[in-house]
Image 1: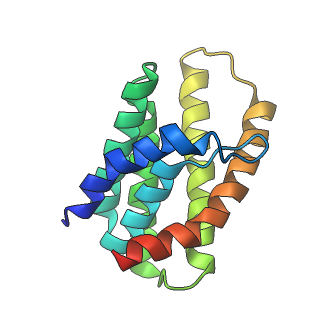
Image 2: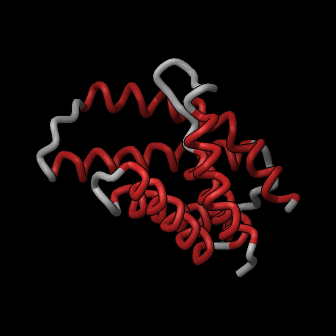
Length: 153
C-alpha cells in the first residue's frame, strides 16, 4: 500500500476539526474522513479502503471520546464497499464518485443509527434521516472533487 493515504488520515482529521464546521451547509457538515476512505477505496482497492476508513474513523472516535469504534466500523465498511465497487466500475466518470459517496453517507449513517439504537441512546429516526439527506447531498457534491484530488496524488 502507498504511504500517502496513511499520511492523509491526520491531515483530513485536522481539516475536519478546523474547517468543516465553518463551511457547513444547513443541517449538514462535510464528512472528510468518509470522503477519504471512499476515495482511497475506489483508487487503491478494498484493503486500502478498509484500512484508511478504520484509521480515520478511529481517530474521529478518539477525539470525540464516546462510543470508541463506532465510526471506525462504519467508515471501514464504507471504504471496503467503495473499494469493491471501484474494482468493478470505472471511477473515472463524474457520476460514480458522486453516487459512491452518497451511498457511503447513507451506509455510514445507518450503521451509526443502528448501533446507537442498540446501545439505548435516545436518537430520533426523523432527525437522523434529515441529517443524512443533507449530508449525502453535501458529501455527494464534494465526492468528485475529492476523487480528482486523490487521483492526482
